[in-house]
Amino acid sequence: MQNTVKKHIEEVLDRVVVLEKPKDITLGHFATPVAFSLAKELRKNPMMIAEDLASKFENSTIFESVVAIKGFVNFKLSNDFLTSQIDTALSLQEEFAKGETKNEKILLEFVSANPTGPLHIGHARGAVFGDALFKVGKYLGYDVTSEYYVNDAGAQMQLLAISLNLAAKEYILKEEVEYPEQFYRGDYLIDIAQKCVELYGKDVFNDPSKDEELALFAKDEVLKIIKKDMADLGVSFDNYVSEKSLYVNWESTKAVLESNGSIYNKDGKDFIRSTDHGDDSDRVVVRENGIPTYLAGDIIYHKDKYDRKYDRYINIWGADHHGYIKRVKAAIEFLGNDSSKLEILLSQMVALLQGGQPYKMSKRAGTVILMSDIVEEIGADSLRFVFLTKKSDTHLEFDIDLLKNNDSSNPVFYINYAHARINQLFKKAEVTTEDVKNSSIEAINQDAKDLVYEALLLSTVLNEAFDKRDMQKITDYLHGLSAMTHKFYNEHRIVGLDEQNQYLKVLSMVALSIRTGLKVLGINAKEVM
Image (cartoon, rainbow, N blue to C red; front, top):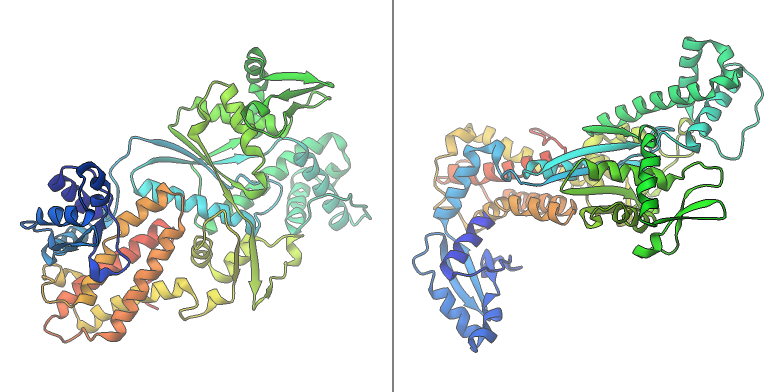
């Protein structure tokens, strides 16, 4: 709707304009400050210019009124225009607020947790944010590919094998073991160890030559757990890329960096000159023992990404990876690629409460709060929604008990209840959306007109949310639209009025917006509460 309005205004004024939504809707549905930018050019008072511009819309059928207010040109939409917008939306429900196919290919990488154990609640935030960004982007017409980078190389794989071995000896072989200071723990290791016994026999845990094989087996089993946890949260990936498989390209990648002088050797280590691109210090890419560092893996991976020729690359990383940004971007430049095509979005950790107190970790989880525990307790929909109620790079704290409440303190319930209330009105009136779709909205009151205007803004909200990588804009919008719906429901009688079908048409538009907004966040709207 907003794009249609903007295009019409620009055609009438023959210039590009900025369109704003006034805080006070009584002033108009949209406003433009274009008169202020023209004041210097025309050497006239902005208020006089605004009056002149407003007069150009006297014959417009889109607007009920166009007035100049303190230099702004304010536009109030006509009932005929709003009706046409509703009719289009309701006739093509699956296409409502969808974007046209964009000529931009995007590779979106998120989660990418080490395959050494089940996902914890911190991983869940990046997973939900990434998946919502993916779904919104696809809905708007972007060619988005989702990807999980499997960190299956390096010391963590050796540590996984050791941890599996120790769990097997303690819980299956009933031996006394001495755990190192740093190791993985949790019931999942006992389960994997039992599978190892079934496949290889108990002696496998006393055979050092089998450590690498055990690590590979454990990694594959952990990945199964991760994929299941993701699926339970409604998240899946187009691609899984193995870090280990990419290391065959390290020598050729290193040769490129050496050829242009971006790598040098000092004290037996190879350093990349990341300070040339703003890093605090040059970073080691090959240790004294000749083994590449974690950064080397990132360099190979990003070269592989750029070799696949996407228009834009988006990484969602945990906030603790902030220091890696400049060094990775430096390597991208050294390899002859444009680092500005890479966006790195950070996801902050989560503080979880229950009844106002810190959430207690489960004994089976080791030392973390498992994502699967929280999904089981409050459901995937509630977890997805609450994780999107704040920008991903800000701290998030929430109480899971609130998400079990059947009242306005639970935002998911509150929004679903608005959708269900609309459905109940149709049942009470004994009509369907098909019965009301041809009704006019000429006789509706101002509250209903404001409500339908808000419902038609979803497309604008989705585009702004994706462009700014801020899914909170969608959750805020859905909550605000639901609040307007509840207020309207409580203040106005609908069923039995002469204008009943006109109001129900408005509410069917509202329900479509709520349903669509939730869908792109990976949540199914409830028909009955």
